[in-house]
Length: 353
Image (cartoon, rainbow, N blue to C red; front, side, top):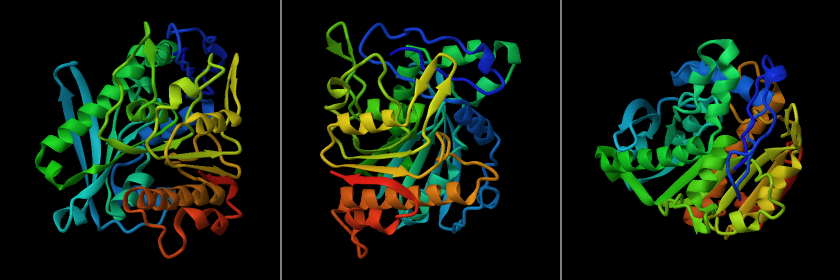
């Protein structure tokens, strides 16, 4: 994996040039100035669901789930794994509930992407948002002149692998606890945005080799993946060997302006499409929203109507996708087949295959 190039508009002049940190096979870029500015905003988003809903302008019921912050510690790695759990009221009654394990982008936190956590919980999904302490909002704290070094450290191969281990550990912890008995272990989903989408892909089955042997990163409990702004594998002309074994159903979400721009490096929106094409999923869906930026899927204060529409459509499509994956249901409105035609003003492209 070559350097994952993070930057922020206030430090772009000092951003390092790309250089290899993975000796072979896997290379990725996951951040842009817009993304990291959004991550800064995410870090300060209040945890209370009612306050967050008011700030984001998203209208939700907030009385159908609990929000719990849990500070776990992985003794085997001596690493903190903070999480935020959106726990649906329906988990206390009836059948066990599905679970979505979510990974944030670089510089984010468990408090981010709350519009997704709230919505999924309202739909009856438990949603576990994992905070990755090596690449979380702690990056923004400290001396501004050493920020570049902190960002470089957050993109090392060791941190990319540690993030996958964070997801596995958090899932282990939840399932081993009292609430684990209320989780349907046949309906577990990995989801993430940008760097988090890379984490989700690796956990869901993307194949990485070292010395001719595949790294043991896949978690067989994951039955589907939701990938927002999934980063490409740079330095590789063919993504097939990496992604063809990612066979679980995948939902790919991007925008026409989902572009990464940093000094010495450019990732066009077409890279997200290449990831979609190479993924070997039994069912895969691509939604390309009109407009929007690399950070549009995040909680953002003062977002315009177009961004709010994209986030609302993202939430709705994720629910339709998961109903199809787990229940085989197309719903009264035709499900995945008809969903795209119902959003002509929001979508630039839509594919189900």
